[in-house]
Length: 272
Length: 133
Image (cartoon, rainbow over all chains, first blue to last red; front, side):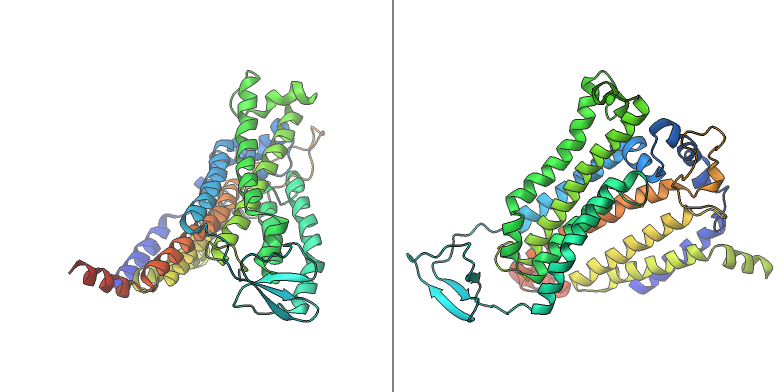
C-alpha cells in the first residue's frame, strides 16, 4: 500500500517535470523575476560582492531573522524536552589519571572538581583514545580560527554567520566527543550556550530595532551611517557584518546546546 | 523518440531529486522504526535542497560573487553572468534549520524511548491498546 502511494506520487512528480524549465536555462522563471535585480544592484546598494550574503542579511533580512529565531526555539525545545535537573548523586567516582585507579567518594567527603590529577567519571567509564585526543587537540584551534574567518569573510567569499557558526559548533562538539562532556562544559557551560544563543537573536533584532530608533525602517542598515561615520552604502555592509555575527553566535550555541542535551540524554554527565 | 530523449537529457536533475525524495518518503511511510523515519525525513530535506540548488543553475555563468566592478562604471554587472543567488540563500538557512529540527526530532525520539522503552511504532501501538483495556 505504502509502496503504491510512493510510486504513484513519484510518477506524478515525473509527469510534472515536463513543464519545468530545462537544466541551466537562463530564462527560467526562477531566474527572471527578482534575482537579476539582486545581482545587478547588490554592489551599488550594499557594496557586498557576495550576492548571497547581501540577499540573506539585507534584502531578505526578515526571513533570516526568523530563521535565527527558529534555530533558537529548536535549542530551547531540546532543553525542555530532555533536560533532567537531578541532585548530585551521593556516591561519586573519580579516576586518578596517572595510575588509572578509580576512587569512590561517599557523601560528606570532598574533592576539588577542577583537580589536575583526578577526573570525575561515571560508572560506565571507558578510557578515551590517546590518538583521538591528541589529534583533536591539534585540529580544534585551527577549526576555531577557520570558523571566525568564515564568519567575517562572508562579504567577499563563500561564508557567513550560518556556515561559520556551524563550524564553531562542530569544533566544540569535536572537543566534547574526543574528551568528555564534563570537560567540554567547563569550556562552554550550558548557561553560557543558552545566553549566547539568546544574545545572537538579540543582536539581530536589536540592530533592526536600532535602525527603527534612528528614524528608518526596521533592519534598514543605511540608518547606521550617522553612527558609524560612513556613507549609507558602506553602513549596509557593516550592518550585515553585525547581523552575521549575531547569527553565528546563535547557530554555534544552539548546535552545542542540542549536542549536550542529546548526547547525555539531558543528564549532562560524561556523555558519549 | 527525440522528444523523450530531449526531456531525459535536459531534465535529469529533476529525475535525480524525485528519486531521492521518493526514497525519503518511502522510509517515512513504510518503516516502523522512529529513527528510520527521521532518517527518511532528512533524505527528503536533502532532495528538496538539491532541487532548489539545481534550479539556480544557469549555463555559462559563475558563482554569485562579484569579483570586479567595485568603483569602475565600465564594469557593468550582467545578471546572465552569475547564477541565481536566491535558491542558495533559501537553502543556506534551510540546511541549518534542518539540523536544528533534526535535533528536536531526535530529542522527541529519546523522550518516546524513555516512556515506552521502544522505538518501534507497532510496539508502542500495542502498548497503548493494552493500556486502554
